[in-house]
Image (tube, helix red, strand yellow):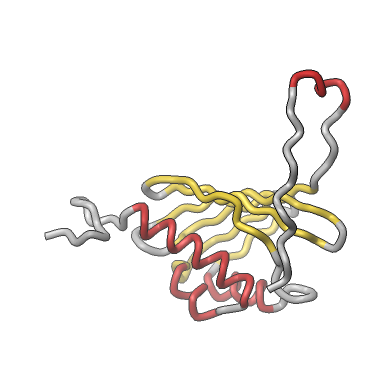
Length: 146
């Protein structure tokens, strides 16, 4: 008989995947290798298409974050959405004086995260040509180093 954390097909429910996603990003910031190893499949793949980097294996991912220049990145998780095996996290980060935005596409296999694809981009002003049709949002408060 399925428990509260599984559906009839035996997969983990959305609340558990949301928690795993939250745990992943928290663990990156504080350098918690044990949690990262727990929420990633052993053969997890992280892709950073803008730099053409591919990190294969949970331990390689952990080592990248452990050796990040200046310590792990500081960011704020703005939103996590998804269902089933596909999730999206939107984050904002303060990199020196610059605000950056990150979108992470997260794919699960069973319980752990199997694939992450991250896109990064700096903030920039809206061009004048479209000002009459848009509203300018105020940025969220800057992420503080952990």
